[in-house]
Structure formats: C-alpha cells, structure tokens
Length: 324
Image (cartoon, rainbow, N blue to C red; front, side, top):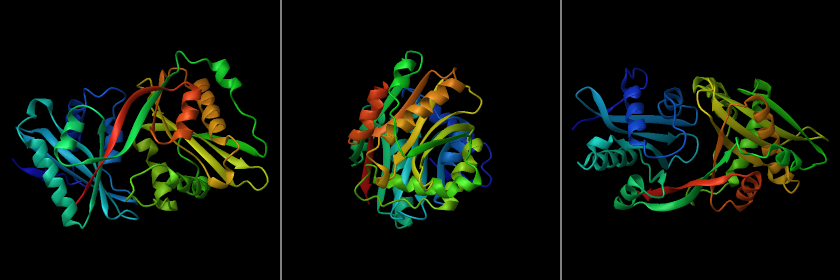
C-alpha cells in the first residue's frame, strides 16, 4: 500500500477521485453533501490562513481512501484539522483507515504540530474509529434544520423584533471591496463562540476575509448576507449569512455564522438578523426546501434563537481531539 501526496498545483484527476471516495464513504451520513467545486476550494486549496495537504491510496487507477489536513498559518500553528479521512466502504476492515490516520499523525509531528482536531457524527463508523484511536470529545455540535415547506411565514414575520438605533444592510454573493474591513471586524466577534480549550483566537485579517469572499463563486455557491449597523456612527454591529448552491441544484441552504459584537448585545440583533435574512432569502429563492445549521450544544443563546424560529434537531456530531 502506497500513500501518495496530491500535488495541489497539478492534481490531475486525484482530487476528483478523492471527492468520489468521499461521496461513497459518507453515503450513510444524512443531509447535504459537498459538491466537487466546494470540495476543491475547501479541502484542496491553500488560503492566506491555512495550508492544505491531501494524501490518497490508489488501487487499479481508483482512489480507495485518503485524507486531508488543514494547517493554520496565521494562528493556531500548533494544530491541524483532519477532514476528510475516508475509506471506500468495500475497502474497510483491512487496516487502510488506521494506516492513513497514522500517516496523518506523522505529518503533523514532522511539522511540530501538537494537537489534532476532527469531527464525526456522534455514532457510527467515524465515532468508533476515533474512540479506537485514542481521541476524546472536545465539543458536541448539533445540526438543526428548518423545513421551509412547512414554515409559518406570517408567524416568522411577526417575530421580527423592533430594534431602535440600528439598521440593516444586505447583499447577495461576495461582499464589495469596501465592506471587507467591516466583515473582518464582525468575524472577529466569532472568537467567543464555544471551541476546544487549546484553540486560540483566529486572526480574521483583511486578506483572509477578502480571499473568503472571492472564493464564494469558485466554490459553486452564492450567499445571502445581512449586517446590522449602529445609526449614530455606522459602526458594524452584527452579521449573518446563508449559503446556497449557485446553480440552485439542491433544495438545501446552509445557515453559516451569526454574530453580534459584544458592545452591541442585548438588543435582540441576533434574532433580527437571522429572521430578516431568512425572510429575504425565502422571497427570492422559493425553491429552497430546507436550511441546515450547526451550533455547539453549549451555545444556549443561539440554540434558543434557532428553536424559536422553528429549527428542529437533525443529528449531533462530536469534535474530537488528540494531543500529540
């Protein structure tokens, strides 16, 4: 068995093969999958904040297993994120997964990394593998979905809170260049979200945010984004975003980050942003059937907002850690 790297500058068809193996390996996990375009740009592309590594095992010209490492470069340079780690179902039970995992640990050690993080559903093959290889649970996350086909839109509109002293601003697709500094300030507000005890604050600098915005269409996606500003000085106060496939090929939308900066909390801006953005999305994307979102189960405030909007539990995932 040979574990070979993918040259991300000249990947040939190996990234496509790994994505196909990902679809096979995660076929039993419900919910939306990651498209090839998104897979390429989230797993197989370097960014200003992270360097990517991909390794695969090829048999008879077919990728039968592999893994991806994301290696932070600006912050958290002591850790690595493992996604995906997969073996095609027909090749399981022969030690390939264990060999790939040990190879990933060797790569981390060679680069001085001391912490590995990954995630799996709380039950199933991935969870059993993580336990068998000495990993412990760092964080429990819940995925919740909102069925837009059954939503009471009149009731949701009545839930919109009146917030004095702030106004909303919205756009679709990547943010305009002049909005990048505001987005950087808002994304730094995500640093107080629940996380592993050994994970540092992320540095959401201008280059990082600019690259993230420019990559939205390259991932085959678009986005509906809304921010709140304080009336008195225009200061950015809060942010929310929903992603969907640019070709509208699925009925899924993904509710991504929502944050309100600390000095602006206590005005119900989080609820206002999420409701207003959802209502705007529904008006323009009536084909969407479901929205999925992730939250740490310890994030009681955001869970309360989601449940008030009608989100229902879909499944739970563990974030796993291993100190090297």
